[in-house]
Image (cartoon, one colour):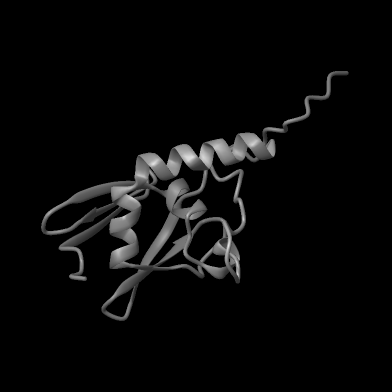
Amino acid sequence: MKPPKKIHLNRAEKTLRVIFADAEYTLPAEYLRVFSPSAEVRGHGAGEGVLVSGKIHVGIDRVEASGRYAVRLIFDDGHDTGIYTWGYLRELGENHATNWNDYLQRLQKAGKGRDPDESPVKIIS
């Protein structure tokens, strides 16, 4: 897989723009965080991995090269163990809408949300 021509981090908009020779994707930090390729998120075996919730406000602090095949994203919530290969970044870009919809459905089914300050149980006093 050829590397992207350019990767641009927009901290203000919390997005990562990945430009390949034949395609361009603008990926939100929250999306990249919840689909991190790390063992912490994907799990250590087969299956869907861990459902990460409450990351609506997450941003990316830094993007670091990882050899000539990937980047490591350093998120402002402390997560920094995912290595995003060029192929995985392309896959995330190509499947963004489907992945995101599936993620939202999994959150709803689990009674979790995107906002860490939001509780599925409302306490009224």
